[in-house]
Length: 152
Image (cartoon, rainbow, N blue to C red; front, side, top):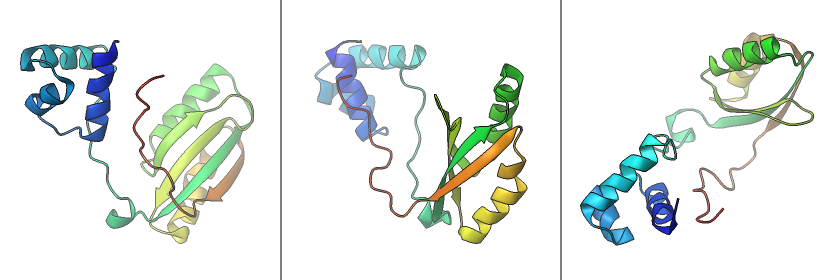
């Protein structure tokens, strides 16, 4: 990964829909060289995909909670079962396994508090090996879907 690859990534994080012609112009490469670099970044998994950033509230998901999960057991089978189960809940829009305590952080989007309560009781509390759930309601999104910095 060199400076040109980093410029390509920075440009695409700002506008993932730009054409290869525009991208090549912005990073000062020929179209064919830019295309080769882009395909290599995709092939190696540096670029994992392209998607639209959707305003959750505009499509009916105006309530967000962060849920801290502590498990009773942490053996490989339990962790795998938890990972699979949480991945099957569409309202869990992000899930991270953490070092230390708690064990997981889930970001959950629902229509409102009542919908969150139903999800909590019907799905989250029934996840495998859950010992404790601690929810924090999001008051305001301050930074969202920020691109990665240019230099690690």
